[in-house]
Length: 129
Image (cartoon, rainbow, N blue to C red; front, side, top):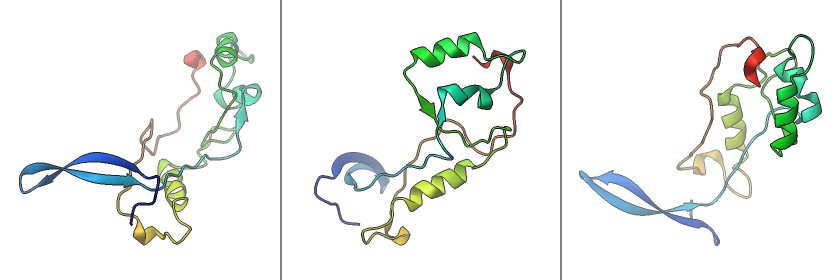
């Protein structure tokens, strides 16, 4: 891929002939994927559960004060996984294509996740909040 105007230039360390060399790298595209419909704070207990049949008071305070108004979960309301990390990553990679760029044109992919996949189902924890 050839860099496009406005691309970000980053120095990257790589090993060549037992030496470290700097290379110019251009970030020419970014992409992301959010699974399922957004979950509002009001719907949060449908996903994280309740304590003794009631929403957690601590969760209510945290949700009100943290500034986040919605989240995306790769779970349904019954706690079943709807997407694996691999499926989410694949959807994000597909988002890099278009405007003449095909998957075969991609040379380097970098990604970030908070949790590795797959994660076995976990019981809802009353003390999560």
